[in-house]
Length: 426
Image (cartoon, rainbow, N blue to C red):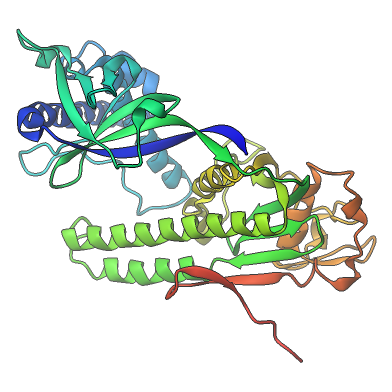
């Protein structure tokens, strides 16, 4: 059994709530007020010069503002970082043609500020695992004559012992809607299975088939995106019937849609890792799509047409890759990301590169060697070969048609799992 250090987040309840409730409320309100000040600055800068200030710019603007000192400096920086990320996400949608995208809102309900999450980095907290206590720093404006910190007594699950973790990186206070709770972000050493194999699998992520897998052993799998598209259509219709897109009912529909998407991504990543274990795969190779929204010619946004831009922006490839990586690494399987450049235009058998060979969206026909393949599977095989180009399995007999006729796994919403689609017989 090998050892590996991974990141995990553990939730803990607060045992001395009456003693710390007011102080935690003050921090949560302070985070909301700082967000709103930063939101006002972003709006002014955008209105004046059409520029979205980044995290460092916001910090420079507001470091001397009185609201900045309501929290520990690192906590204030994290609030502004989240705001900058939210604005960049909105601006990315706007550039890609999503006219319904709205910029991040002010955190305010009538005349009250909500309780926002506050993050404490290592200089902002002190953990006492012997007595299950954590000290959280107050901002300079909230300190009084007798205390400059909040002492929370916490209770984790019986199977969690923070004294045994590698290190605690962050502590967050999170308002659940009813009470405050603590989230500890930790580096944890875990035992991982030894994978006695150097076999690889390539994964091509797409907007028709969410994932196409090409195994070194000579077979392929497809995971169509039908269920997520059905969810998008279903929930969009329900939200459109709401009188106000910001109403409580619309928010509930949005939350349910998000929860179903998250469940799908968790289930898919878990299923693929299990399939890799069955096939004794040691390395998963995934295409790196970090620049998929950019046009390499001019550095601006890539335009896929109005419908394509909306679909592309809702494409959760980054979230899926994160889930796949930590689930795979926990089983001793390495995950590598490689460039997808030319993988869709090149033949995985002879290497011939020609865009016209992709005769249809789902079909690739090589004019050089005559290979006929599912286009996504061909791309997945090219991605896999970037890590193991000299594998003896590259000479595997392709006459069985595995490139052209991959197995298809469909997501069953009733059972919440994936199952192979029965092959049609002639």
